[in-house]
Image 1 (cartoon, rainbow, N blue to C red):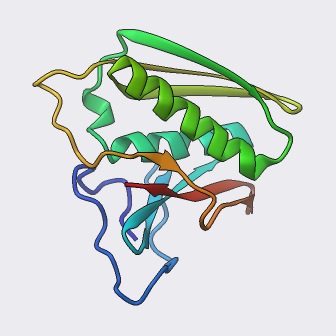
Image 2 (cartoon, one colour):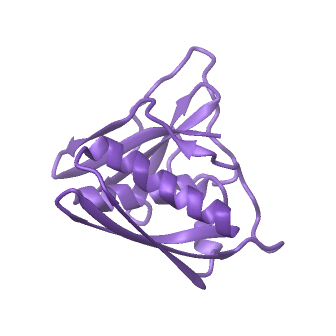
Length: 165
């Protein structure tokens, strides 16, 4: 497992033995997200005190594969809203909406917020247009249903899925 302190431009090494979810060190206090290996793709893991916080960290993990999210300036904002009662499907919907907006508008995203009201979700992301100063990492095409799991984790939540690279 590659924790968040690793370089986001380098995806985790892949085990030829197939999909694996490994136990590893806990995420740092500044980056409560992680990765797990999955054949040709990568699994993202977000953890948080609330379900929405875990989803925000899964978005951080997803976009950190594409660039250093700390280097992204919050110059532009996108807003998303969707309705999904199933938490697992809500995770995939959230990530795919963010990816779709980022791709359509040519944005590198680096700041995320999400609020849940029952089955309705209101989220936003901030970022800037891609430019030569932002080093590109691995392009993420979309979030998948593979290894999808959203569950309580101790006092908080863990949200994970495989993203298609």
